[in-house]
Amino acid sequence: MPNFEHDGLTLAYDDMTPQGGAERTLVLVHGFASNRMEGWRRTGWYAALERRRTRLVAIDQRGHGESAKPHDSAAYSYAKFAGDLVA
Image 1: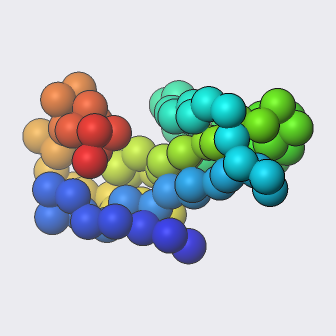
Image 2: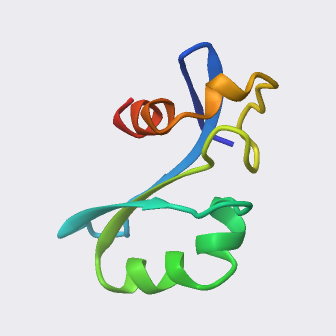
């Protein structure tokens, strides 16, 4: 599982480039109570985007999937989520 550190947390992600290269990049952000596997991979989006020569970057947001799950509610602000995406 690829991951990176941001704001003291370990966050999981996938960064997939189709064989032969990509024509564009798309960042996939799942919704509430989901994760990158359920929201994007299992539903077929990874494969569909690969066929369209799209590089995809999908993150498990903090508190979801394989990413860290802090217990402090202050760790779940919109600014924190946005910071994770930029990082």
